[in-house]
Amino acid sequence: MKYLTLLFLFFGTTLVLGQDNFTVADSLLLGRYTLAAQGEDFKLQPEAAKAFTAMRKAALNDSIRINVVSSFRSYSSQKRIWNRKYKRFVASGMSPTAAIEKIIEYSTLPGTSRHHWGTDIDLVLGNVEVEGDILSETHFHDGGAFEKLRLWLEKNAVTYGFVLVYTRDNSRKGFFYEPWHYSYAPLSKAYLKQYRERNLIQKMAQDTSIFGHEYLSKAFMEKYYAANVLGINPTLK
Ligand SMILES: [Zn+2]
View 1 (cartoon, protein in one colour):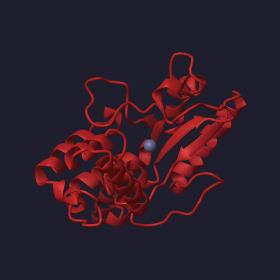
View 2 (tube, rainbow, N blue to C red):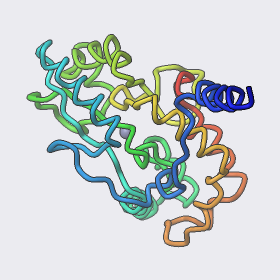
View 3 (cartoon, helix red, strand yellow):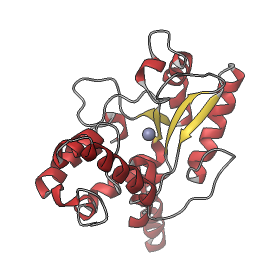
View 4 (cartoon, rainbow, N blue to C red):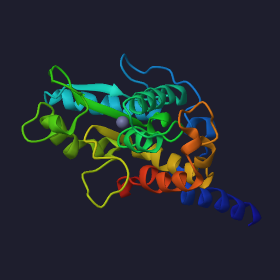
């Protein structure tokens, strides 16, 4: 009887915790690690990579060639992006706080990017030339070059576990609409949960090699967290 109770406890717990029953290191959540390339043009966690490869194959069967613009990105690459933009905006005459506000329209503070997790990916249509910035909303709507990719992903991505993060929803706070940015939900939901529980956000502002770090006050970080980290598609929370 005792044995049966133990057995029940073991399996019962496994059933209740299900997919969330694993923990990941702070270093993963903050992008302070490296991830091996899976396939020729992307880096994702193995489970997400497998799902993405299956989705890509299905798209190709429908004559949609998917190109990856960005997948895993480390803390240090994100810091390079941040610092380059900060320098450029301040040099153009913006105040430090205005520069930071401008950066966070599309770019994250190092340590807060979903691309650190190896679950998120930016996608465009292959074999198509566009003018200007490749990741621009205009290409995905109103007859733009990537519109057929957007329509395909809106219909099919969820079958493979991929969910649009920054939706076209005026009530959503934080980053602007990004029709190209998808997240592998079975992993990223669990990662976000742990990221929230460990309150990792306040650590970022202490990195003095981030340009403008002296303007990243506690109040700013709290606002940024609420809007830019949590201002996502509710199905990912
Ligand atoms: Zn992205």
